[in-house]
Structure formats: structure tokens, C-alpha cells
Image (tube, rainbow, N blue to C red; front, top):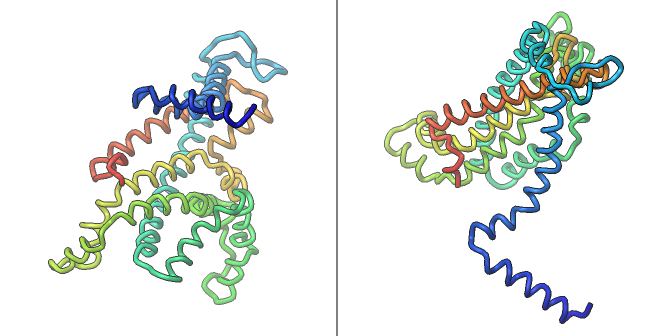
Length: 306
């Protein structure tokens, strides 16, 4: 095909695209992404939901062609699975609170820094994102283990008399999970902070507000959209945590992601695994709506973010 014929074909395609209305043109531009989402996420999820309504089978992951709600009844009535759901949400709430608080102050410090210090603060946040999830989680094992670096230093300076059981333990899981989600939360908040005018803070201080008062009265309301996004990211990722509980947790530290893995790959009980996943997804969706509603009252509407 010659260059002229290619140009003619492209011109015809562009004329068809240009003749569409604004909304239809936007839909055409989004169609590849919509198709990708349907094929990669929506269709597989619907298949998993269908499996959750299948009967359990001996020797097979599930009985094809059957329909029952027994798996959902078992998930909602089993004390073990209820405990797993509660633990998952406890981990999500604790890790989210710690992450968002640390991210707010780190983002504020980065925003106020300049030059090399600002670059170093940003680089230290971006650097963990360049490392695989398993490696940057597992690195906490030699640091926090009873015979690890942290306990050795504390014993050497005499702050403790016996090693602390940080890993494997719930405390180690929280530390690891906060470390995993912190960069995303910090960058979400920092991106909104960069739009805040420092002159507003100076005006508040000129009117007699202290540093702390000016932060809570001026800066915090302005960055609530970023805090909302950071909260949702941290909460969703922490409730569904897998790497931190698997590598840093004890046997009792069992979130739903580990239970789903065992039910699918060890017990070959796919109806229970998919039913538990569906219940958790619904609960997380409701929780996220609550987060948006509550934080939105304090200026956390992400549609107002610039």
C-alpha cells in the first residue's frame, strides 16, 4: 500500500471520528479500555460469582451445572470465616489509619522542602515502588525477627532484656502493610498539596494562627480529596493484604486472602473461596462508600480535586 492510499484511509477514518458528537467521540476513545476491562476483569469476576453458587464436589473444585446458596450460608455462619473477615477489616482499619497519618505529615514535609532535600524525600518514596512486592516485604524478616537487627540493637543498648516478638506477629504484619501502601497514599496526598497556595497559610499566621492551627484550619481542608483517595487505596489494599500476612504474620494472622488461597489450592473448595471473596467485595464496596460519605463532609469530595 502506498503512502497516498494510507493517508486516504486515515483521512476517511478521521472524518468518521470527527463527525461524531462529543459524547460519542469520548465513548469511541474509551472503547479499547472498556473492552479490556470487560474481558480481563468483569467476565472473570462473573465466572467466579457463578462458581460461588455451585455445589461442592468430592474430587473436583466444584460441581458444574448446579446452583445453591449453601456456600454463602456457610461463610455467614462459620465462626472461623467470620473471624477471618473481622481480622481482615481490623488489619485494614489499623494499617489505613497509620498510613494516612504518616503520609499526611511526610507529604507536608516534602511540600515545604526544597532543593536536594525535596528530591531526596520524593526519591525515598518512589524507590520502594521499583522493588518487587515480595522482596520489599520479606526484607522486614531479618530486620524484625527475634534474632534480627532491630532486636540486636535494642539488646545492645540495654533498652530491652529479651528479644521482642515482632515477626512473626500481628505487629510485623501492620508494619509491613503500612510500608507497602505508604508510597501510594503519600503521593496521592502530595499531588493535591502541590495545588495549595502557601500564601493562604501565611495569611492565617499573620492573623494570629499558630503553625498547628494554620495547618488544621487551612491546609488540612484543602488536601481532604487527597486524603480520601489515600484512605480508599490503603483500606482496600490492606483488607485484601496477602504478602505481609504470609511473610510476616503468625498462624493466627489469617486474612481472607490467605483463606481463599487455601480453599482454592489446598482444599479445592472453589465455591467457599469464591463466596468468601464475593462477600468481602460487597463489604469492602459498602465500606468505601461510607469512607467517601464521611470524608466528603469534611471536603473530601475527590471531584473537587484539581
